[in-house]
Length: 241
View 1 (cartoon, rainbow, N blue to C red):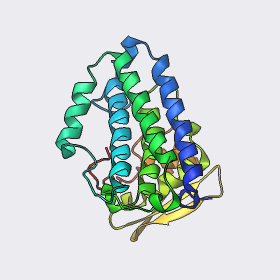
View 2: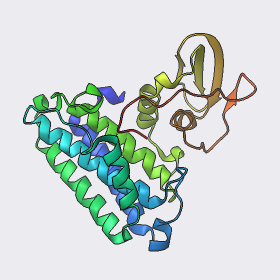
View 3: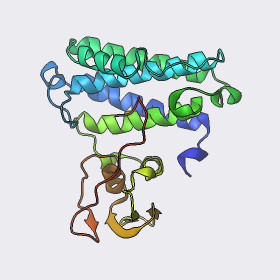
View 4: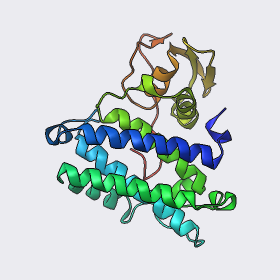
């Protein structure tokens, strides 16, 4: 079952589980650990938590305006507003950060719970997609940034469905002029991305997904070239880091 085949109910159920996991990790962090470094260069855990809260509010905002037939920027103030909020929020007291995250996630889940099948297909400005696309994006945000918190959650803990969805979403990161042949060593999954000179990269399925997402892997990846190829940029959008 691919992520695209998930019903809105199943997808939001998975996002709710991811939300609960992130909240649990945040609550377990003491004040000194919240201001500590995350797995994202230049970001503390406070930056990650603030970003997760802002992103939840942004997608709640996309859904709310979609119900009115309106398209609105993902973040109030655009990219600059997004970045300023993260920098300012990262310095807030941990208890306030955690409360803001819980409230933002609760509000997002509440508006999703009220949507009809037709509502999920309403257009939004986020990636010129639909409300359902924002739910898939929130799944990625919650799962990948849970790893970035460096609080014990690793790519090896991702579900198979999430790893496959991540590989789907990041397929366009295949380097220009390269046919990237991904082969999972712990799964029957294999796929080829892009076109050109063939380069094979092999490893555990979740490690392949982590590498494509720009995150550290739990195990070794092997390549048919001397080093792993350099991936292209993340799919362009103001909302993704």
